[in-house]
Image (cartoon, rainbow, N blue to C red; front, side):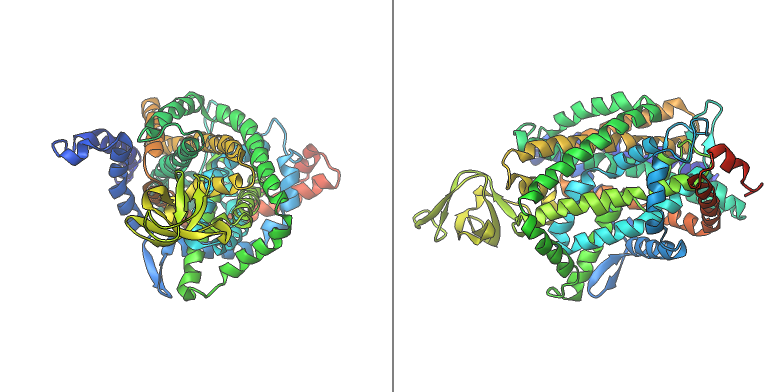
Length: 586
C-alpha cells in the first residue's frame, strides 16, 4: 500500500509542476501588476516558491564555523573518502584497466546487454558533461571564489570511486526483459540488493524514493538548468529571444528533444556517441587556444586556486563557504554518489559487472578533473573572475556622479567592471585590470554577481581573448545542453518504468512533461532554476548511499572476479579461455 502510494508521487510531482505553470496566468488575473508581466516572468514567479521550498528540505543544514553546511554534502564527501580507502585507491590503480576495458578488450558482442562499453560511457558522459562544466564552474567561482574549483577537483577524484561502486551495482542487479531491453539503476539494486540482505521493505521504500527523486532530477538538473543556460548564451551572443521571449527558443528545442527521446536508449546512445566526442573536442580545443595565450599565467592561476581554497581572509567561514560550493558544483557536474549514472551503464554488453564499474570511474576524471579545471583556468587566467558587472550600452565613465563631471573615457558594451559602490542613479566602478575608475550611470550597468554570473562569466572569459569565441562557445553550449537533456530523459524514463511498469501511456506522458520543462527552464531565472535543480538532483543521495554501504561486499566480490579475469586476458588468454578458467560460483 505504502509502495503504491509513494510510486504515484513519481508522476504527481512533475504533473503538479506543469499544472502550476498552466494555471499561473489565472492567479491574480485581476491585479494590474500581473498583467504587465511577460511570459518568462510569470514562469519564473511560479518556480520561485517551489525552488525555495525544495532547497529548504533537501539542503537541511547545520552550522559549522558560522556557515550553514548541508548534511547531504557532508555525506557525499565522507562517502567518497571512505570508498576510496575501502577499495584501496581503485580510482588511480584501475585507470589503465579502464582505458583497455572501454576499448572492448574484455567483452564480446554476444555478451548480454544492448550497447558497448564506449556507448555506455558516451551516454553517461553526455549526461554529466554539460552546462555544469561551463556555467556550474562559473557559479562556483562567482559564489565561492576560485578556491571552490580546488574542492571541485578533489570531489572529482573521490567521485571516481563512488561512480565505480554504484555502476558496478547497476549492472549486477539489472533486469533484462523478454525483448532484450535492459532496465537498471539505483532503484533496482536498492530493492533487489537489500532484499538479499533481509531488508525487503526498506529496499522497496528506498527504491521508490530514489525513483521519484530521479524523475525530479531529470526534470531539474538534467533539463531546466541545461536549457536555462543554453537559452541565455544564445540570447546574449545573437541578440535573439530577448525581452521575455526565451520560452520560444525553449519550444524549438523541446521539439528537437522530443524527436530523439521517443526512440529510446538505442537512439540516445547513437546520438550521444557522435555528439559527446565532437562537442568535447570543440570545447577543449577552445580552452586550449585561450590558455595558449596565457601559458605564462597558468602556474599563477593554479596557485590562486589552491591559495584561495585555504585562504582565511574571510575567516574560517569563508573557507567553509568555498568548500560547500566546490562539493555542490562538483557533484552537480559529475553525479558521483547520486546513483543516476548506474541507469546509463546498466545496458552495457558484459558478463562482469565490475568491468563497467571500472569504465565508469573515467567519467568524473574527464568531467571534473579535466573539463571543469580547464574552464576554471580560462576564467582565472583571463582575469574575468575579478569583475562582477558589465557595461550594457555605450556610456561615459566620469570623475564624479553627475553628467557635468569630466569624462574619464568612453565605454562600450564590451567593457567589464568591478562595482566599488552601487547607487540608485550612479555606480562607482573600476574597469577590468584596473585601467581606469570612476562613475557610470546605473542603467548602463548589468551586475553579474553570485547566481547571476553563470554562463556569462565563462562566455566573457572566452570573448576577452578572441571576440568571436562566444559564437564557438554557443555551439558547444547547445550541444552540451542537448546531449545532457536527452540522456537525462532516459534516466527519468527508467525511473518511471520502475514506478509504473511498462505502462506506455505513463511513459509517453512523462516524455511530454519533460518537453514542457524544457520551455520552463528557458524562461525562468538562473537562481530559481538552479535552486530547484539542485534540490531535485541531490534528493537521490540519501537512499543511494544507504544502498552502497549495504552492498559493498557484492562490489568487492565483483571487482576481485573481474581483476582475475582481465589479468588472464592481459597475459594472452582469449576471452573464451579466460571464461573457462573461471572458478564455478565465482
